[in-house]
Every structure is written in structure tokens, then in C-alpha cells.
Image 1 (tube, rainbow, N blue to C red):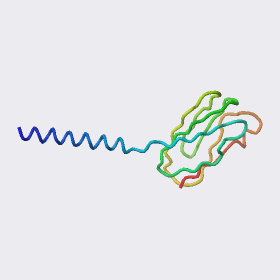
Image 2 (spheres, one colour):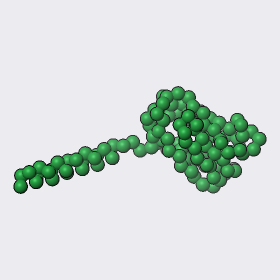
Image 3 (cartoon, rainbow, N blue to C red):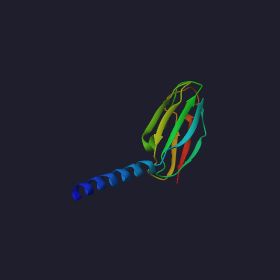
Image 4 (cartoon, rainbow, N blue to C red):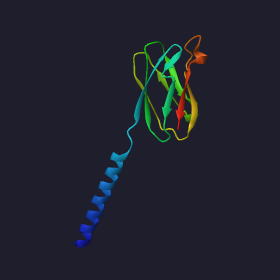
Length: 117
């Protein structure tokens, strides 16, 4: 009987530990980015290495894209909708984000910087 109590107690402690770990996980920081021909606002975003973020991407303009090639993430940006893109930077440096859907003359210059420290 005593052995059964120890097993139940150990299982309960393990459950509490795992539950506390789930609560301790970082909630992503939300970064709102608006896109319009041919600019992102903001066009420079500061991040911390290992900090999870979610980009909320919006445009009222035309269909566009948001790509961060150095981290292998991208999203469409659909007029009138909020698109979500998650990223947890795993390296420090300055990285380019850009529109990867042709949106007209000036598209080639539609970019910004992520600065990860």
C-alpha cells in the first residue's frame, strides 16, 4: 500500500512540474506590421535572440508578401485580413525582411530590417 502511495505522489509531482513548465513558457511578443505600396511600417524591428514573436501583418492596399529568408519564414498579406507569422530568432545580427510578391513598380525596394541582439 505504501508503494502505491509513493507512485501516486510521484505521478502527481511530475504532473505539477510539467504543468508549471507549460505556464513558464514565454508568450510571444506581438509585433504589428502594416504594408502598403512600397513600404513596411515599421521598417526596422528590434528582437532578442530566443524571444518568440508573432507578427500581425495587415494591408488595405493589394496582395503582398512578408518574407524573412534568413529564418526561412514567410506569409502572404491579404487585404482586409490580419495574417499571423511566428518566429523565434535563433541567431543574432541584422537581417532583411521583404515583400516577396510583386506589387508594382517600387516592389524591389520594399524591405526592412530585423535587428536581433
